[in-house]
Image (cartoon, rainbow, N blue to C red; front, side):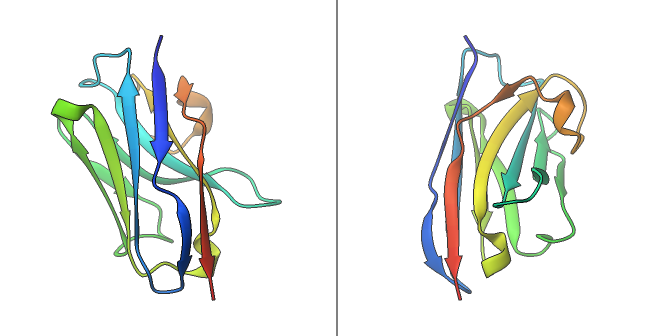
Length: 123
């Protein structure tokens, strides 16, 4: 079975940093597109960042460009999201997901989802 395990969330002050991890199992990994999404209370889930494998092209939502970096360790089948200069509006549950389709922020295209990890940024 395909499983995605997201971790690394926590409580951080505004301006701080966190690194999220998404460990994948039960899939070949290379050939997939892996995305990070987030959902704040009362809001719809939205795309944050995407990495396509194996070319490792990356994509970012405008709201996180220049602050977040997505990268991967293929040997560990893990995708990371380095989040710097965090803002209170980054507070959300962060999910990772994967698809065999091309890079897209469309949620319905993603076949497998992790359980989510809470990120809280205090002002």
